[in-house]
Image 1 (spheres, one colour):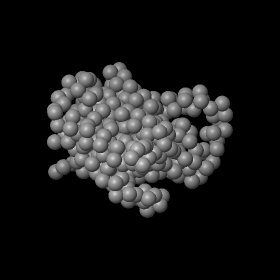
Image 2 (cartoon, rainbow, N blue to C red; image 1 turned 90 degrees about the vertical axis):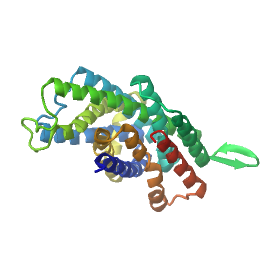
Image 3 (cartoon, rainbow, N blue to C red; image 1 turned 90 degrees about the horizontal axis):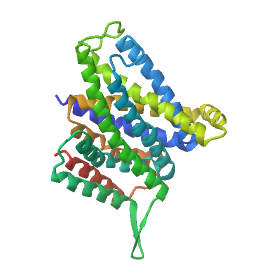
Image 4 (cartoon, rainbow, N blue to C red; image 1 turned 120 degrees about the horizontal axis):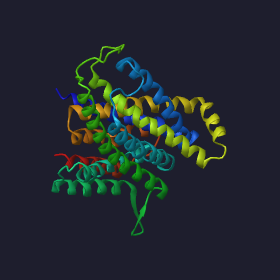
Length: 322
């Protein structure tokens, strides 16, 4: 019934909305205040969700191994990855920022080979070349027989790092979920059963992705708050300014709902119903989905070359998993 594929496609739509909200919010309040507020909102929503579905407001049944791997995933995917992504949005916007997120597929393939022993077929090498070629076509320009970077170098660096961190973080999350499943089995609990004390009659397997996201968001909030304090002497003033900017706060709320709350949790759920490769391929559609709303809402000029580059890059991602 293609349940996992449908969820993964919904994740791509959710991440498109997240990128649009986050671009506006990060430009108004800065990446660190935005991520600090966003993680606070996310943890609040997850706190309530787990209380309703697990009967307790924390990741039930999670053992030390689960916490370790998901915390590592949160450091890589949230603290480093999301910081770089929001910085990338400031310099080059969400449309190009999402284009660089296609780098998550080759990163996930390489990391999966190293950490999980997953096979990497020769076609994956072709996929890497095609993905990089699509990105290059979109961001490089030729003038007077000289090839130059058509975007700010800082933005390219931050966006590329964000894509790499997402792929690495996805593999770490997969390891964490494997530990979570083992911990639930060791507790003698069926994932099809409704946890004792749950207020909503949902099977446990539907709650586990939200519990895993809560673990990642916990270290995410701690990391972003620490960076905010270290790099800003007037961090209280920056936070105060951020929370009093009504438009920015609505953008943060939208980025929270579609990002770490729904999007990330649904992405973990999608990998339970379909292979990581198929899920990651569908997640990678965001650079194409975002072109139309970016042109309409932000009035960005989109060239045919940039559209072709985005399509080529996504096709490169698909080659990893054929």
